[in-house]
Image (cartoon, rainbow, N blue to C red):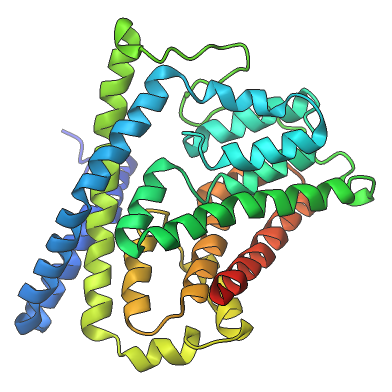
Length: 343
């Protein structure tokens, strides 16, 4: 029998297992147990208690998301890109944070809109607001950081979309946005169907067997996804609270002024994991001295520059438009943090 121990498939499977949040969290706890046994139980109980306190938000979030997917409510988003350009920008920025899209669905959806002539300004508004907030993220943020912070993030998402949309609208006659699309055909990376404006949602999804199956599948998948990432996030938060000195955080992103906020935005770009890990992580940082404005800037900048968000933009448009997307996202993140700090 041939030796398959070094074949690509088992190696990829092993590497994927090592990258799992479950595995990483367990390895972190194991390292704490081996190197600092006295703090193992406090770290474990902190993470477990935080996850338990968030469980009601997780349950509501996954139920809501499964309901939206089963009813086909995301089809309503396509209708935001019909009509006058100014109206489109407003609706795109608002609905970008409410649409239950996976990162794969955004790519063919936006490609279809651009191919049909939807203005880049409205598409940019949707792109900038979409990674920042959705119903599950709003609830997880509220659970970790409180409703004032969650509401500020939701407002920032819409405001960033409007900011980017109207900037692009004002500059649409420049060479920067001439022929923004790449020529390659864009397909979904996960086989997800893309919503169309003519599709009608069925709010009583339980009347159709296929929609009931969609609800069950989405509920299980999203519950497992949220649980694994939040468990990992709360382990990281426990480590921050236990081992990171408050004065370190305060010296970098604490205090008043624009500099800590801009620093947090720039650090958030490479350091951001995803919208479910960030709130617990920031809760730990804020307890150590991070300012509220810096935390919001970190979250906004990190979401815009996360791999799924950037991949969706990079796969469709030319580099100059992609650079504009990042510049709008970072500047908007800093402005959001400054305003939130002032309030």
